[in-house]
Each structure stands twice: as C-alpha cells, then as structure tokens.
Image 1 (spheres, helix red, strand yellow):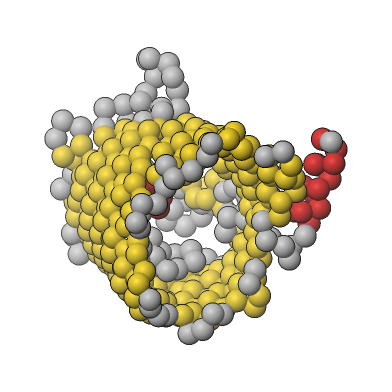
Image 2 (tube, helix red, strand yellow):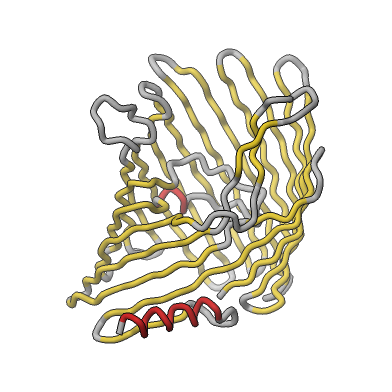
Length: 340
C-alpha cells in the first residue's frame, strides 16, 4: 500500500495539467498533491538581467475524517531555491554583503504543520506555517513587487487558529514561539497576532474590510508593534483596494515608526486578461532620521490556460532622506506560472 501511494504521488507531481490531484481517498483518509513552477525574467537598476525562481513549490495535504464534523489534517510544502550571500568585489560598496538569487539550488521544507478542523467552527494548526496575519491586505494586485503587510505573518513554531466563515466574517489569532527554548536565550521572533476579515458580495458588488494587530520581539528587549487595516470595493471586473500599515519599534521608549499606504486598482478585462496598478507611499523615522518612499507599480496578466498564467510587471520608486539625498530605482519582470 505504501509503495502504491508513493507511486501515485510521483505521477501526480509529474502531471502538470491537473488540478490538486487526489492520490489517495479511502476510509475517510484523503491525500492531495499540487504545486506550481514560478519563474521570472527580471531586470533591476544597475544589474544585469536575471532568471529567478519566484516561489516554485510542491505541496502535500492529508486529512482524516474522525467523525461528527471533526477531522485531522497535515500539510507540508517543498520549495526549491534559496538566496546565497556574497560580497561586492569592487566599487564603493566593496566587501558589502548582498543576496544572489539562485534557481533550484536547494530543495527544502518551507511549511510543515498539522492540526484539527471542525466543520462550521474552524481550524487549529501547529507547526511551521503562515498565520492569520498573512490574510490581511486587499490592495496588492501584483505578482511580485507589491504589498505592505507588516504583521507577524508566519512562524517556524506557530499555533494558529482561523475560524470558519460566519455571514462573511472570519477571525483568528496565532502565537509564535522563540527559535530557542532555553531560558537564557533571546526571545527573538516570539509574538502573537490577531485579525478579523469581512468579505461580502451582492451580485456584481463586492465589499471587504480587514484588520490585524501583532507584537513580536525583534531583539531580546525590543518589541515591534504593528497594525494594519484595509478595505476593498469591487464592481464586476473592477476593484479598488486601500491598505494602511503602522509599525512602532520600542525598547523603553519609541525608537522607530513606519507608516505605509498602498492603493491598488485592478481591472479584469475578461476571464483571461487583467491590468493593474499599485501606488505605495511610506514614511519611516528612526533615531531622528526620516526617510520617505514612493513607488508606482504597473502590470498585466494573461492566462494561456486555467493553470498557465503569464505576466509583465514594472515598478519605479524614489527614496528621499531627511538630508535631501534622493535615490531612484526601477525593476521590470516577465513571468510564467504553471500550476498543477
């Protein structure tokens, strides 16, 4: 039986034209396999063009029906690429570390968790996973350049609860443990997040309101407190989303603040093609120094097949420091995603 399940899983991974493939379903036990290959050919300012992995993955999900609406579940997700740290060899930044994005250089487990689901109530999971904080945000319609989520959105050792939907409303919370359980070790990474999500659609009109709050230790005695709220209004193929994020870093007194606003506009031309734009403004103050960032993102996506999508996306940003120094940056990328 074990050999049969493994053979089916391998066959499902190889079949790129299928949806999430059910490789085993018997006696209340179900195993699904799916994933995607995500590649981007991109060009950044002062860099050569590069082909990079944008989160290609294969995932395995299992569930066991325990009866009376209760089930046990398990999930693991494999990723294939990790950045490699190198040093600048020449120029004004000689010796400075930078990340080189590698393609398929390291197969590793990105997510690994298990838990329970109760029909009509929600799910409670334990392990390396995304938290409810990752669900907050409505304005990011981009493929890889947008987003201002500042919440505690994942954890290697996390307990996460997410409720079922009640008349469009969903809520939840998560607690993330420190990386080291030794009492003498740093509390880095420890924290919690709570969030509420409301999404309703009446005919062609849709409305969403989402908010979240989190706290986490970034050093042994320094905490980061974050709040984020967003709202979206949509009609037919047109959607307008606005997100606001506020972060305060403190020790005994406030040491830094960051505020960010993102406005996104998306238009589905038809069921295959879409165009979108995102505008981001951010202001950060730390130890008496204030910087201001502004970005404009433009893009278009097209589905060659229900499981094959392509896109082109570009971003232009400007960063202004308090001393009057302004730096500009730009990025452009062409991407392909094949889901299975």
